[in-house]
Amino acid sequence: MSTLPGEQESRILASEEELYGYFQKFSKPAARQRVGIECEFFGVERATGKALLYLGPRGIEAVLSRLAATFHYEPILEEGHVIALRKGENWITLEPGGQVELSAPPVSTIFEVEKQIQSFAAELREVENYFPGIAWLSVGLHPFSSLEDTPWVPKRRYEIMKAYLGGRGRLAHEMMKLTATNQANFDYPDEATALAQFRVIHGITSFVSAAFGHSAFSAGKPNGYLGRRLAIWNETDPDRCGLLAEFIEEGKTFRDYIEYVLRMPLMFIVREGKWVPMEGVSFREFVRKGRGEFRATRSDFELHLSTVFPEARFKQYIEVRGVDAQRLPLIPAVAAFWKGILYDPEVREKIWSLVRDFRPKECLALHRAVPKEGLKARIGSVSVCEITQELFHLSCRGLGRQAREGEESECLYLDRIEEEIIRPCRSPAETLLEKWEGDFNQDPQRLIRHLEI
Image 1 (cartoon, rainbow, N blue to C red):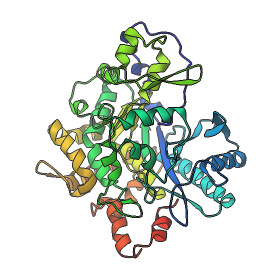
Image 2 (cartoon, rainbow, N blue to C red):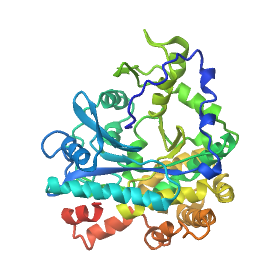
Image 3 (cartoon, rainbow, N blue to C red):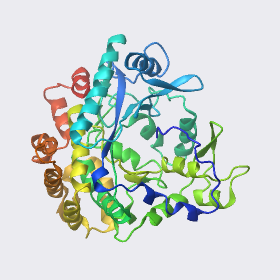
Image 4 (spheres, rainbow, N blue to C red):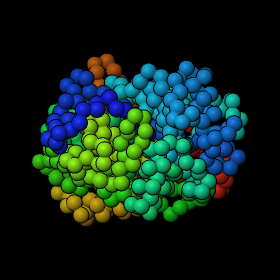
């Protein structure tokens, strides 16, 4: 949600036909395919676990200003407030509730991804020295703050989204202010491969969400879920969120995805640096008829793509979105898992054979069962646990084949979670709940120390 506005392409679209070749031009040969990571963190008061305010001497804006001064980022301002930082291709942006997000430039290996994450985490820990008593948590749902405790980041984009989404889903504001994820971005070599990748992602994303469930706490206590972040997304906006079951079918094309996006209501456009709400007109109607004085442009389309929130989406790459934010050591495993599958055709086809016979209704039912049942859920007569174990083992095989001569396999990142998640079929949420009742003795301070980066 943190994409910044741009008006580089102001040429008016004559018809939607001009958009049908949009994604093809971003194809990359296999030798140039890379991995990008996006990680979101909660800034909290260590004593209470409550979200940092945006304003004030200990607020998120002050933290961003200190990051900029200490590590030579360029501050990005909106109406005089710092709302993002930039250094080269590194972006530090804010989600609506003040979640701080690293968007790192794409790299070739998960080893480099891990270095990017560790580097930014070290920067966040360094600025703690200037703000004693704050901490940074990596978890899928804010474990202490409520909607009322959490102030809105003052971005015009979020004002419009707050009003729009608030009328579309009963938990939309919780999604905006209280959730966090680890996203991974991948390239595609051609249209057919891109849709095969997309199909597999949507076919198995519920299993992966179950494995990485990590949002079991709200208001400082268990909330009855293993992956409540996903349950919240399921109640946000049916037009633009959730599992795209139709794309689990074979034979889909980029044009089908464009049609999905064209049907979707438009939230806003940017003109002369100002955000303009569009009151839900579909993008197709905007192209064909305009809206008042405004006509659709290519930049409007690209901005619209950033407001499409299914479990995976196309931009200039494939963005995989369905995982709760993990504890810092586990984040590289998320990217490694998807890399092993998406960049190995043989593994991808084997995984497709595991899930291709599930009906769309079964997939949608599973997607709604996973937040509470996790890896204990079933799809038809099949165990989610058993399929998930097979997915991880196949991903490891793919990573082994992708290793360059003389280099260690990136499967080591999956090996790290073998004992914790894969073999016992136990999500991080289940481990955390067990610790809460055992070693933590229900002590919120121990929960904070466990989740901090």
